[in-house]
Image 1 (cartoon, rainbow, N blue to C red):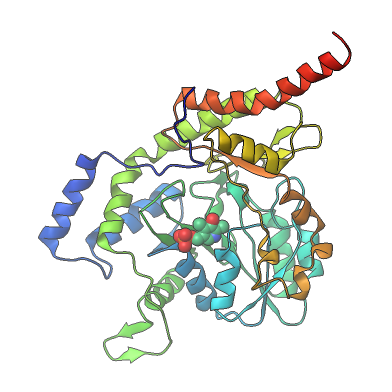
Image 2: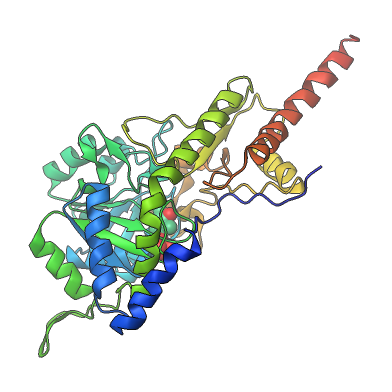
Length: 383
Ligand SMILES: *Cc1c(COP(=O)(O)O)cnc(C)c1O
């Protein structure tokens, strides 16, 4: 029996010989950061690949998110999801906004528009939804709510690299969208992030904010941070971009194999892929139902004993963390769907370098508890 550890993800690395020429270029240019030539090329090539007009690269997705809040000068309360990575809500704290948690939809696990609307108060300035697992939010309903109440919308699109719906890239929706290019994401620059915006004025403002707020040598009018992506990080992006379609295609094969295998496994239901013409297969979440012989945590443990390292994204809910749990909106009674789903969801390993034999090892491990349960039922009836 193989004991090789299978992690929930594994970063894609381009061939080293394709990365090194960029390193040599940096040594020749002696330009290490501050919007150098590789940074400029990656901004251009990524915007083209993603099908967006304006994209500003960042040193990570969290600073991208905080800068997006700053760029829109958001005050007061921001409605967001408890079902996300902790950076989503932490960004609001760093910008001195109050997170207000709304509940999620039971099918998409994205913010439920009715719950957003119910959370609006006179202090609400914006909505911060997450395209969880890369599945698009109900963007029409969210835009309608934002328009009627005069709210801004920032999409945390950290999971949604390259995702399209029938209207094109979903990264051009809302006022701003942010990406993470962290090592664990579909497309990585070791660490990195981006803000996608609609016009060149906003792009200029964001570029100033990520460079301390500097407008020119003697003019600094706003306290920006340092969110710049370095040349070596941009080099990683440039070396990776030619491979990204193949990476996503391999993820798609794994996604399809899981879905086919899970069809005859009662109690394990993959999240449906809705509303996208191009998916990125960033995650493979399954919902562990009552008709599976093990509950979610028991399945997580059994798989871990077999060196299959799944993740319970997103458990615990952000609303349950000590820095948020005292908020009125954090009460589990107001978040029944998120509370229930956080107990049932399990993300299975998916990454481009996964071998078919490891994929089958995972599928067999998911089927084993069902076979055990079946055998003991047969024994019970004396068959
Ligand atoms: C990864 C992630 C972030 C943060 O990105 P970093 O680049 O790691 O700072 C933000 N939001 C979500 C939903 C994420 O998954």
